[in-house]
Length: 149
Image 1 (cartoon, rainbow, N blue to C red):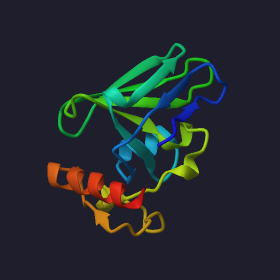
Image 2: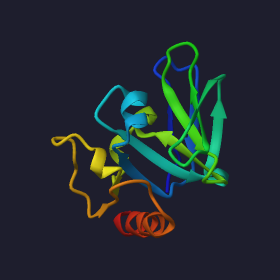
Image 3: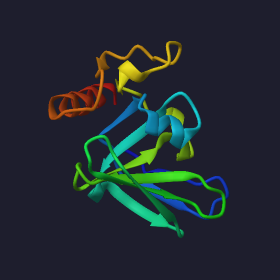
Image 4: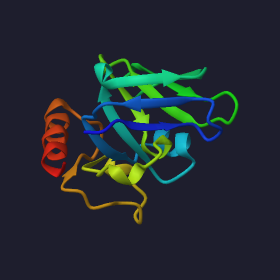
């Protein structure tokens, strides 16, 4: 797989990844707020798949539904959310799909928090969770992503 790169709107923050685990659509209220849209699109990677990350970011931390912190990194110049880390999911980080230079390279394989989706904002993925993901759902996302590459 070729290196996948991206960055913020102004170019002050740049990153590249070597591989990813899955791409999913999240309908939770936090993702709606983060994106200012009906959902968020997320690219999950293992920490060792990060090829490069340059530029200064600011961090906003919120408490997730699980009670664990979620740390969002954004560009202080343009405000683009680039990535975040969820403490309940160690050794992984998440990148905003829209921050990639060519987001069309990715395939969305699942939806979570589907019970919170706006009626017109569903993709109709085979893998759907009404709420938060569990290990069974995460493993299914990984397998489905491998099938589609």
